[in-house]
Length: 177
Image 1 (cartoon, helix red, strand yellow):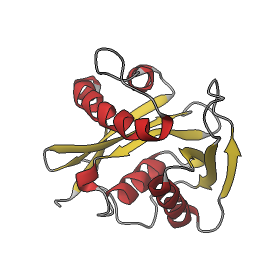
Image 2: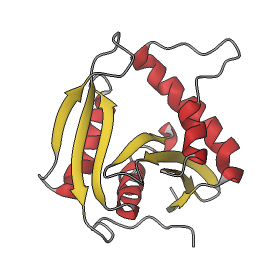
Image 3: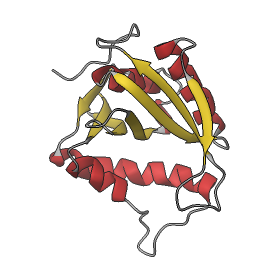
């Protein structure tokens, strides 16, 4: 796979990110039991918030001229950044793409971080524990918290760690400049 680039997405990227969002929600539907809306879409409030709220940042991940994923961060104006949504298309997984993208996003926003995922998503469990260890060594914690307004779902797993200013030690992700 060619080198990957991670860049802050702008409004021109919203349609592309929206199509990736459908793939992301489709993947999660297996875990959450959600079905598409009657028009075939999934709820996309987080997608719209990522592009409109001042304390959020949407990132687009590309390989050459192909979109391969996204990361939505929230809490930029607060004390803790949260990886709100993170997705890499299946064809780009297991090639260190996700690791490099996650490290690149975290490096751009030093400070305390939280990342949530579901225990039933075995790939996410392995991935986010590995990312946390690569970024913070053994200085990260994990806890389970109820999903707000979804008592039908198992609690989310939340990983917390903190970073300092400057890039992480991992291979950098080309920022497109």
